[in-house]
Image (cartoon, rainbow, N blue to C red):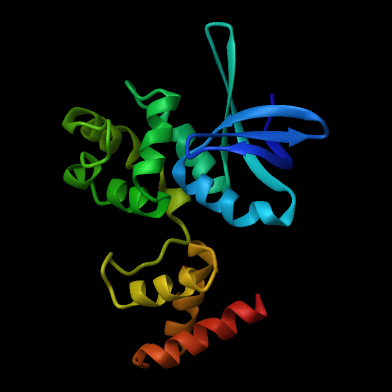
Length: 197
């Protein structure tokens, strides 16, 4: 079973990429978030993806993810009744992993049902079957609710080229040191944290 691939991106679309690994081309289905990261990093020459190998009716399909968290979330999604790998990929394309986990933890069925392909019944099943199974994936998520002041800081750092998870961690660290600081001071403190990482 293939668990990880590293190679050169030969072709890419928002739904799949062709990854050249030492002369062998692997077609890998990806969510939009991974496509964005692949585009950002493909200039470096090689890209590494965590792979879920899916066997179905004699066909072998590869699904790739830029982070382990996304891969694990994908695997939890496909364990839900009525959600196959293609819908799970669409779900991860329709909502960032952090937002999806937060929505599941909060049992926010309304928000989940806004994802293309997810109706009220599927959202209900996702909450019922996953709420208690995602705790290890939620660890490390920002403790602030969506829309909190830290979100602007995270967005600013992402716009500077940092990964969202790194940015969230840095903002959390900066806030611990001086929770009442102004935006610019927190941004400087977050950048210091990132420079030490």
